[in-house]
Length: 192
Ligand SMILES: Cc1cc2nc3c(=O)[nH]c(=O)nc-3n(C[C@H](O)[C@H](O)[C@H](O)COP(=O)(O)O)c2cc1C
Image 1 (tube, rainbow, N blue to C red):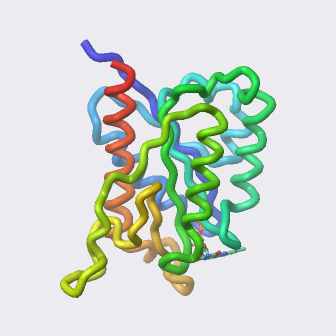
Image 2 (cartoon, helix red, strand yellow):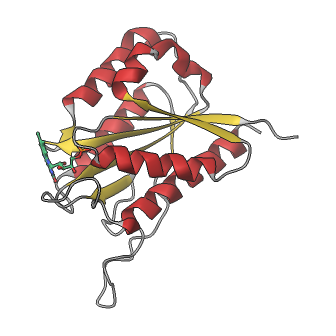
């Protein structure tokens, strides 16, 4: 019988949009058999930092604020340093990332690269989004999966004048589920 694996989704969200994306990542993870998952805010993760080594895979998410991860998410990143950087307890775990912001680009790539670098410093194994960007030709409707066109991780877009009740749109939430399912399947394969 294959071993059950566990995934932690750790995110920060100031106004709820990134939280909504995180919840759909979580839903995608749970769609895969023999996988358990837990959603942590970055503050919760800081308080329970010693429990993180029990997870097999991680999906990190932050809104893009001023072209990078939010300061509160950076606090979490730095909190892992004394505990894990020297002990290498997160070495060889699976990792992926997502970010949400108001503009289609909005410098989201910078945020994804910060999350990637964080994972790399811990020796984690990075899983990119794995979906082609289809919103890039004259036939595109703008509702394709990965409509923001990122490869490194997931980028979602929430209109600046819409609350988390209305943004990001359904297509981004489905893309988030796809990332969750992909990370769950790869974590499962890697550990079995
Ligand atoms: C301090 C601050 C900085 C921001 N910087 C950016 C930015 O660099 N690029 C962008 O596209 N949107 C930017 N935004 C917009 C947010 O990314 C957007 O509102 C996002 O949906 C917020 O996610 P949240 O509800 O999870 O906090 C910024 C918002 C704030 C409050």
